[in-house]
Length: 193
Image (cartoon, rainbow, N blue to C red; front, top):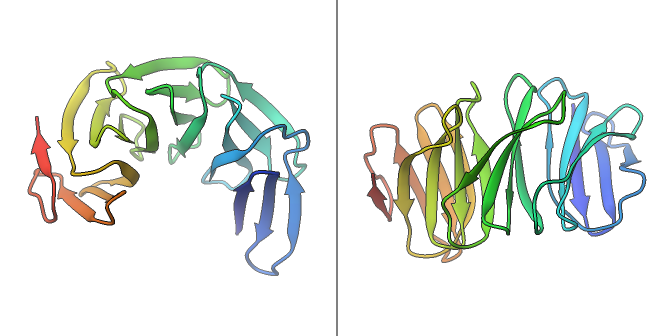
């Protein structure tokens, strides 16, 4: 198993078995804000300060594809469990769903009024969740691009995770929330439909 570490000067692939480190991402020209690995461990996706996402071959460390549709910094990336699609969130207030094989932009999601800080995509690739500095999480239908639900918090959302039973997230205030799929709130925040 491997892990990717992203920073202001590139990415490092860390072998979790032996601790060896390998530089990947030859040609990085800007800060790495977000990273994710495909479930097969063969490719990595990075979100950069220079408005792009880059897909990497983790064996060679070379770039496979570059995705150039955001207008400002990419702050978060998430990959489906089949490794075919990914979603990126940006400070331009949009999320983009990508086909990782063709490089095609599949859908642009708009609905936040401030920067998107974090994204998470469902295992089946049918739904995504975005968390923003506008104090909201939005649950998206990725077939239609429509907003399914919105969750309002007391401060900007820094981190979220979408899983079959609900949503787990953290706010700038230090609060953590858990919202079950039946919309029963187990921690602070206000669910809105």
